[in-house]
Length: 254
Image 1: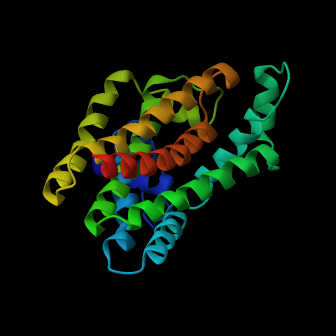
Image 2: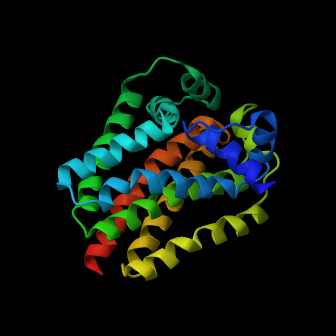
């Protein structure tokens, strides 16, 4: 069941050529723990350039490019849509923000949100690449697992704004499903002990994306009436940025 669900999660959250069909999708949407497990796959592959002896700018660029190749533009598109909805001014109601959210055209708010996320991720990747190779790898992996854990948090604790991807994932999830999600983050700290990074940096890299997801979910509940696929994608992109910077800052200071 878990392996089938993981195949569905990889098919949905990445561009990796995995099969599974409807059975994998159904298993995935009933198994939130597979979301952070995908973080290990994406984070591990994307962080490989950080663990090899190449110039810092090249390692940072390859990290960002690999992320895009692995995950595509789905999450970034969600961030763009959420940016447009957040940019609506005045005393607008929930229906108006939802209307903007569903508009396929990207406005100034969406373009600005994606641009800022990409630039800040790029700057954070320079910080990752500037650390010891295995430290950068571990922090990048932790940030990815943290961003996916943030998605699982929203799926397990928030209501969907409307029928669609959000409701497909949230309708069967409950807060008790968070226990295996939390357990799924523990290998990060085992790796940190083996590598010798200490626990503070990896903990910050995991915790910061979860905090960002909680904030995004709280805003979405008030402004949109709940979460949606776009909200989950935005939480992933913003959470990754927060995790990378938090991990580098805390590891550097401690």
